[in-house]
Image (cartoon, rainbow, N blue to C red):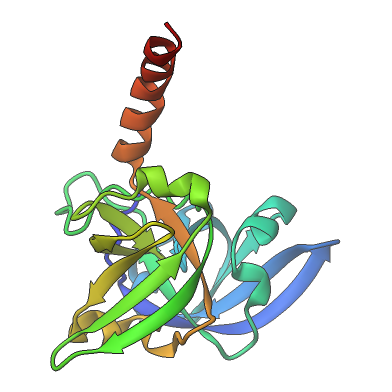
Length: 204
């Protein structure tokens, strides 16, 4: 479990294909090295991965075929920055929201509006996921906990403050960029619980 508060940007140091489309990523990092061990979970651009190696100044994580297919990890190149967050400790503050690191689907940046203080990004995702997007609700984009500023028919907007822009991979995103999207866990639980009952009532 994560909170969506990125701790640092790591750098992809190497990529190895281990079996068909499965990949091993070597990621250079500093802060997350302070308290992390082999077998621990690490969110990489919002994807929960397991640390399989730990060396000086870098960790290695593996992504299986399904993860590569469902996320943007397969698009990473050596030298690219990635958002990193260690799993939340039971005694830590929840500065964002409950993020599982289980990406629902890839989304696409449709527009970026620069305002005097912030930037507003509009994302398009699979129409089937829009029911989990709630105005002023939570959503994780590349592992960053964000508030939905506006919900449109086929997309949604989030506002990015300067700190988030400067300290995450958001500053590298542009129109057309693909991102990892995880909708709010609570919204999914509520909708999946209520939806069958609403459907049965409508059929009566």
